Image (cartoon, rainbow, N blue to C red; front, side, top):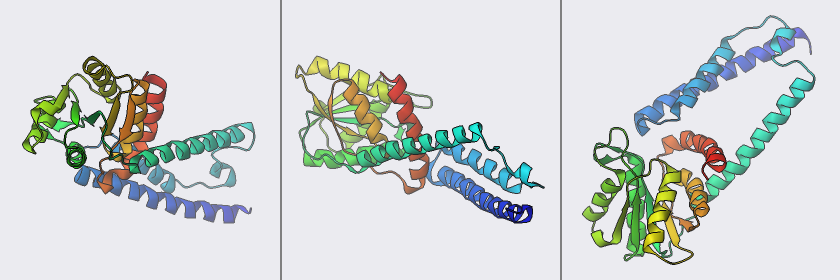
Length: 262
C-alpha cells in the first residue's frame, strides 16, 4: 500500500480512536453521576485516555505506523488476542445465561448477598437485591432467609443487619431470618453461610436460592457449588448505566475466583 494512502488510513483510524476515547470518558462520567462510585469505572477512564492519545499521535512514515513488526512476535500477539477473545465470549456468555435465568420454586433457604451500605443505608445495588428478594418471598412466604455480609469501611452496622432491618420493615418475620456477619467478599459469603447452614441443617444436599445482581450471579453460583450447596439463582436487575462496567469487571472477577477462591 502506498505510504500516502496508508497515512490517510491511519489518520482516519486516529479520528475513530479519538471518538471512541471521548465516548469512554463520557461513559465514565455517567457511571459516577448515575451509579455512584463504581470500582471498575476507572477502567473506562484509562481506556479513554489511551485511545485519545493514540488518536492524536501522528506518524510520518510507514515504519512508524507499524507498532508491531511482521514475524513471530506479531503472530504470538495475534494468538494471544484470539485466545483472550474466545475466553471473553465464553465467560461473558455464561455470565449472561445466569443473569437471565430465574428460579422461582422454593428452596431450603433464600440467600441474599450484601452489596455495601452507607452508614446504615443500603446501596442502590443492595436495594435492588432486597426488592428482588421480596418478590421471591411473596412467591415462597415461609422460606428461611440468610442475609450475608459483614461490616466494611464507612458502614455503621453489618450489611446483614441492614438487610434484616429492611426485610422486617417489609413484613418478614424475624424468626425466618438468619444472619451471617463475617464475610467481606463473595467467596466468604458462601464459605461462612455454608458453615452456618451445615450446623442448622443435617440435610446432605442443602438447596439455596441466591439473590444478587444479574451480572454477579454466575460467580456466586459456582462459588456456592464449590462449598457443596445445591444452588439456584434469582437475579436482581442492574442500573443500565452500570451494565458495561459491571459485566466487564465480572469477566476478570470470574477468572480470579476460579483460580484463587477454593
